[in-house]
Length: 119
Image 1 (cartoon, rainbow, N blue to C red):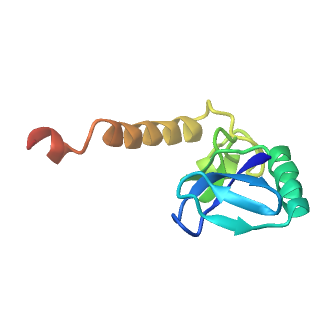
Image 2: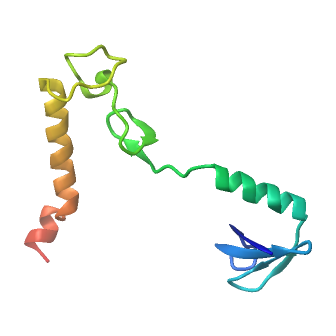
């Protein structure tokens, strides 16, 4: 018997399901569903071979990218490197972009001014 995380139609959430003998059983609500063992084994093998990567929207590239990616020089206004290359991080365009990003983060990390002055 193996365990696989799948969406349950009974509790409408992703839960671990115990599988075996042509059935899967939800550990959340106990719903029993028929399933082909060979397909479950293939799904387990496929899911374990894929790494999960954190993706977020990058305001400078204006795309969803992996967290920690290097923004293109053209996206941040880098004046040192070519637009399709990586940003240098030291020129006036890069430092200006970094300053704007830090100011934007500080606003969200410490609450909006109305929250601070009028609790």
